[in-house]
Image (cartoon, rainbow, N blue to C red):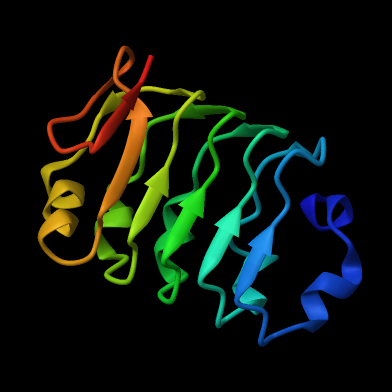
Amino acid sequence: SSRDRYPMNLFFFQDLRFLHLDGNQLTGSIPFMGVFEQLTKIETISLRSNNMDGSIQSNIANLSMLRTLSIGENELTGNIPVEISNMFALESLKLDQTRLSGTISESICALKSRSLKVFVVDCNVVSCSCCTNCST
């Protein structure tokens, strides 16, 4: 289970607001729900430069307090879920140097008029009319 890949005591901190586990050689899929759902006050999740794979789950949108999601430099695949457009607190979304593909939904782009200030993807495989920065 993905829960086994993370320190168990991490999930006893319901008041945890910032989680930075960059460059820790974490593997497997990112367990946005089922694991992170217990961290109801989480504002930042940064899991850059690991060996994580799988897709971004649509239920990520349930993390309503999330301001920063930085999960680039992993082996993530699939499309960027349109449900991200429901994350009204999101200010920074960094999905660069992954294997994500497809077209960014206009509803996600609409977040730029609300809260989203930084949006980075690999523009050579993801079509994005509203990204603030492109990684190639």
